[in-house]
Image (cartoon, rainbow, N blue to C red; front, side, top):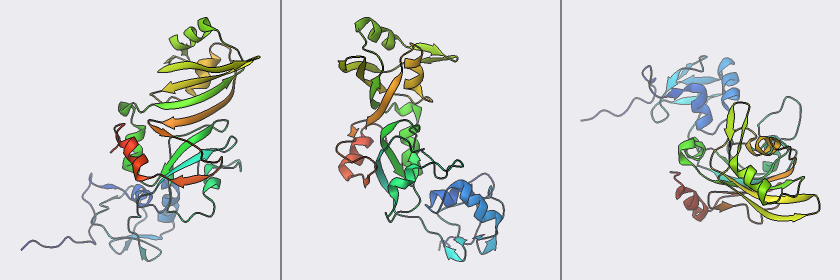
Length: 254
């Protein structure tokens, strides 16, 4: 007869995940916060205090406890936020600035992390989840999940200027391009563009347009794949529906 697994075991070297990552994957806290808990001797694996955050553990078999309470995997949570301009996409900010977690105040949630980033000056659709496998699939460059932005610029481009934008530019040794750039509307000295990216480089749109001396006045992400921001109020968060998760799955996310 097969023997039941020993829930007090430790994973063999080279298998499983590191202990600090395990606490994050279980929805308890960030990896950085997990390292502090481990250093303080508050984490036990198989009944023994562990102070090494790199220790390999098996989430399905090892018994992990914090402050005496066993940690079990939280239910998976998938959120969308309409990020306001001025918030940073991080859990804690050393400069004391507002973060996207301010949008989650009052909600009963496990620990969730942003899926990708929007810089402080950008706004719009941001996803958050405690499902790291799902998040990694969304962020994997091989998935080529399109992200759509509405961008207000300090110029009124003609077709020749739009053509130059579409050709892309070399910036700091990188070739920056977009999948598509279209004029939404123009008036006076400003215009709105719809820009679609299928890769995520640091401040890609701002750097691309800056190469042509064009200032970005507002940058709003309005869609990820077929998932649209819709009418969600600025600063608000809500759970994704099963239909919306299916839309993302069609973009290669499993």
